[in-house]
Length: 101
Image (cartoon, rainbow, N blue to C red):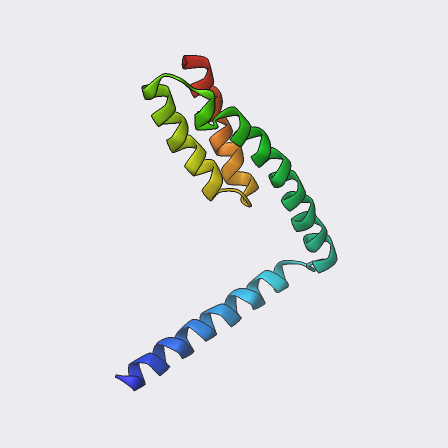
C-alpha cells in the first residue's frame, strides 16, 4: 500500500511540473501583474458580494416562498464570497429572482 501512495505522489508531482513547464514555455508570465489582478479582483468581489447579499438578504422578504428562495440564494452568495467569477454568475440569478418577486 505505501508503494502505491508514493507512486501516486510522484505521478502528481511530475504532472504538476510538466504543467508548470508548459505554462512557462508559452510565454513569459509576469507574476507581479498576476498578483495585482488578484488583489483587484478580491477588492471588487468584496464590494460586489455586499451588493448581492443586500439584495437577497432573507430578512427583506415577508412571503415565506420568497424568503426560502432568498435564503437559498443568500447561502450561494455567502459561499462564493471571494470568487468574483462565481458572483458574476449569481448576479443573473439574483436579478431574475428580484424581477419575479
